[in-house]
Image (tube, rainbow, N blue to C red):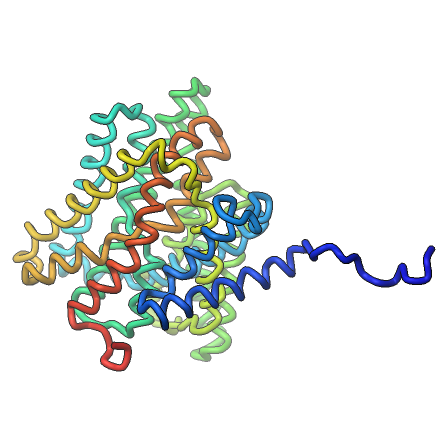
Length: 402
């Protein structure tokens, strides 16, 4: 033992705590720079920082480090999907059936547009179906954070949130059901083909129902105390994420179901509309830095034309349906067009869906990633800007944010 052995090593610290702190600081700085200097959404800054720090950039965030972040990403998505789900009032959708019909039609048209294009471009049917299912949904996290930054309120903002919830639910359903198709492609046993999607969907919905019932009864017991209910909801979201990992269920389906059921089964209005506030910002930074870092930009040249076509037909399908059904929804054509622009983003959940496939069938997941993540690379850059522009042009941004 030398006299100076108590001193630390001169090599840079590699611990996860240091890395995690640097990630948050870098994301915060990038978001501030893009918002204040370039007048772009903070999300764009978070994503660019992720790209720069990730494996496609400086490689400060290695793939093992990104795996360590995954639990925080799941919690972040849980907060977003729960918050999105509790905006869905089933009673209101029963009265305004054209809004529900619009969401279903828009989602269906998007799926078939992407599926047919990918088939025309020579993509195998299994890859095309899974990619199209992922492409159905827009990014709730982008829409919610941009709307919150702009303090946006109005028809375009509220309808966009409802449509995102509808197409998220349908995308998760399609994606889960297509696992049977995927198992058949890889010659899995008939029990796996038939039972796996049913287990995941039924189990995830059941977990969401249990979380909702626990939240409602907990809210009745705690009373209308915002601080206590905030802790209750966050704790249940974390528990739900943990349960879905342990039981190999879908965290995305579980948390969306949790939000929807907590809203619509709460007959006595025991639960308050808890605002996650500044605490959620930490998870938003993590989510979008992670989304940027996981993009495999080296795959983009291979699938560039496919990605561009994917983005184009996805936007066209959503926009055309919204324009055609605008009069039935009481919207002007300009509002319908801006609504279509607001639904452009596709981000974190798409990345998670691709990764869940790669975890089971790595070869299939690699090909799916080349298609979907190349499109996500485009949409992560233009998506937040499109949503930001749509809500501003709709006149729904608060005057003090302009």
